[in-house]
Structures are given as structure tokens and as C-alpha cells.
Image 1 (cartoon, rainbow, N blue to C red):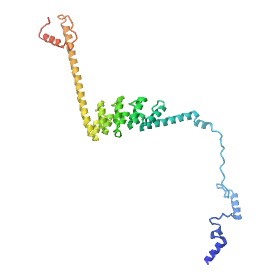
Image 2: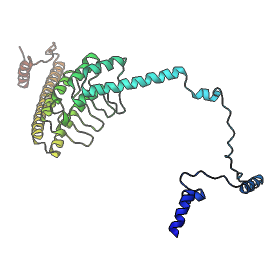
Image 3: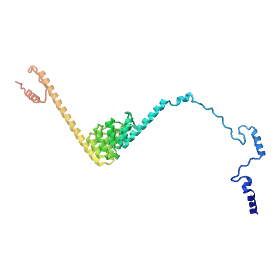
Image 4: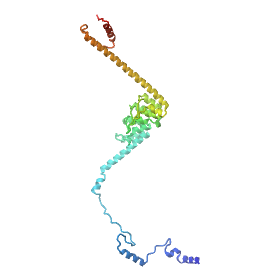
Length: 327
């Protein structure tokens, strides 16, 4: 019976949902007249704080009047055409400066020359105070160093914010194969050997810390101070001992011994010269004193003593002690 009823419903109206108007493709049926009248009556009543319950869209907020031009205050905030051009120029200069630093870091000489010609003689820096010569030294780009120093007159001792020079930056482990030519070139151009960074490190400290024996030898032979101390009181040989760089430690120990011996010999030479000067001053004083006492017997003045006349003065003193006089 149920199957017969369902078949009848399908035959009469197409489906069971179609009888209620709830099928997939069914269109919404309008409300009966009585229901719409009731809704209109409810909408006609004024209920404070509530929107009217009618089949109509919500009321739109009032439209704001559009302004044809900005106010005077907004005119002050907007940049003028001259300010826009200045900002554009600053932005372009910053981009060229950034390209200049990249060109020096990668070692592209032609690109570096192009960027330097556009920079109008200024030396751009980044937030750490690095310039093109610092990036070239840090990457060991000798060709870029030559262009920057010889053609564009970059200072070889230009400092960063941490007081690092190009000679400091070229000395690190990644530049083992290219550090020596750069060091030779910077020293040839007058780079300072004993400049200290903000923590007191010299180029020799860095070379000893990294264990770069060839760099240590070049720096020491060029006159680097082997006794220099950093802010913590460490010498270059102390870093060799800490990091177990035995070859560098042996070389620095020998260099320190030679330096101490040379300093001692220099001090002894100065002491010997000083003693000889004191002896001459003493002889001159004795001659002057004796000439004043014996002015009746010797109415002439002895000349100031010199090394050549020292022998004659000794003879004079010897005769005076024995009571002899000159004929």
C-alpha cells in the first residue's frame, strides 16, 4: 500500500517535496494575503529601538557630500612638487649607493666604475659605516681596491663605525688565498699597521687569532707591534695559545725575543751616549773651574773640551795632581 501511495504521489506532483514547494528547483511561493496584511500592521506600529519588520531592504545611511578639492590643512600635509622631486632624487641616490656596494663586494670593476661615476664624488655608507672599499677588502677583491684607491682616491685607512680599516677586514679565514696580495697593496699605499678597533684589536691580533701564518709574517716584517694589547690586555701571541696555532705562536715568540733584544741594545746605546755626554760635561766644568782659580798663573782660557782634546786634558790633570806646571 505504501508503495502504491508513493507511486501515486510521484505521478500526481512529480515528488513528495514538490507538494510542499521545497524541491531543489522549486521557486519560493508568495505568502498568503492574510500574512502580508498582518506584517504590514506590525510594521505600521512604532517600536522604539527596532527596525521595521517589512519585506524591504534596510535604509541606507545618508550620503556624505563629496568635496571637489582638499582643505587648507590637507594642502599642508601633501608634498609639493619640489619635495616630490627631492624625495625621488634621494631614493635614486640610495639605490645607486646600494648598487655601488654590491659591485665592490662581487668584484665587478665595470659596474663599480659606472656606479662611482653616478655618485657625484660622495662616499656612500651603510648602517655599519661600510663603504665600497670595505666591501672590496672584506671579499679580497684586489682589482676593486686598486680602482677605488688609485682612480677615485678612497682613503686606505677609512674607518667603519667600529673603527675597522680595510686592512682589518681583509684578514680572515675566508680570504686565505687572496689576503696576501691585498695586504701587500694596502701596505704599499700607506695603510697603518697598528690601528686598533673599538675593542683594541690590531690587524696582527686578527691574523694571530685566525692562524694565518703568512699574514702574521708580512705584518711583523712590515713593523707591526708584537707587544700590542687589546682592551682585555691580550697580545697576539695569547690568541695563538688560546686557539692552538703553534706555528704562529713560535714565530711570534721569536719575533718578540728579537724585538726585546733590539730594544735593549737601543737602550744601552742611549745610556752609553748619555754617560759620555756626562763625562764631557764634567771635564768641561773642571777645566772652567781650574781656569778661574789659576787665572794668575794661566792668563788664557782653555777651549771647550772635545773628544780630540780629551787626551791632552787627561795629561794636564795628571801634571796638576803632581804639582807640575806647563813651561
